[in-house]
Length: 234
Length: 258
Image (cartoon, rainbow over all chains, first blue to last red; front, side, top):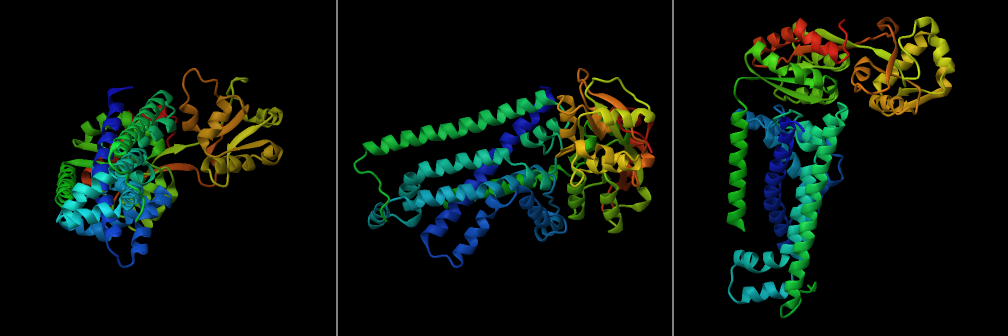
């Protein structure tokens, strides 16, 4: 591998990390809002969040391009204050967040729903405010599930191709991620380079998902030793 | 959780702003068809010296690049692998018509798996095709290279004799693969595909189909994007890409010049 071909790897890891942080904040926030109170048109919102999971990524990318392009509603507003998203690393993060949010949201929602309501109510009767109940009781109990969402989202963000190509472009040294570099390497008959990118992607994704499996099992064994297992009862 | 998520959101917005602002330095963005990747990557340093600005190159299929320009992506120069996409942008006034130029041409070539020495004269083309077991071409319904191949064969009056032994590839690279791996003794690909094989590949060029066989020969048009704020630099880049230095590099990649 040439020194130039290491750049897509560091860039991709950066984009996937940034995207995962944003996705976690968004996914957890949305899941909490949807599980806590009755939201009007909840089904509609949820469908919108989940759509990128079933859309071909190119379609998601084209939609984002329509929104964020200089003629789009968001893009034109940003352009007025001198900001530009298309063809920047930010666009790569936006694409990765959009496609990984459904995974994060689903994981967080399932994790929050699995927390024993009685423990939450007990914390309330002991005088904790809602924020503290969430931070001290709900979130720690839901942590393994949330962590699973983090791992899935990171792996999905790392593999993102279609939407990224549309709004971040395929600009070597600036917005070229591992999947885009791999695609270019295959197209250009550079199989050694393509194989190296493949190995890195498999290695990173495999380790992230394996790590979460280990953490999950460790958490389960700790909980098993506690006084009472947290059930799925409502 | 609230304060933490707020802090994260703030950091994300600040980072986004920083990244977007840093992209405002003196630079020129070229959106170029994927098939130009190797040649343009090699020419980038010389091009930057010539225009005196940083050159940012965005590679994708011509259709994707056209859609990006239509949606107002910050592109200064468009270098397309198909006239149709450039025509669409020109009709919409999104490229400056007076700056448009056909810089490169690509052609169709018959390649063999090495069992035969090339090139062969046009007179023996019918015999070579007749003897072959299979002929690999791109699926003419979806692959431009396949449509061109069928058109050239029809123009030579050879299509009916080979129609029964066509192997259809899903893209032109697959056609190359069929021949390189010996699965098909013959194939028809772009000149640039034939030029992309490694030195130890068995693939040989047997016959270059003349451009005159095609109703619309393969051209690579380039033009300045109307919305560009660097019209002069953009024109300078187009001039460089037509220079002898650039032509030598494009020639290495298998391109011809109209």
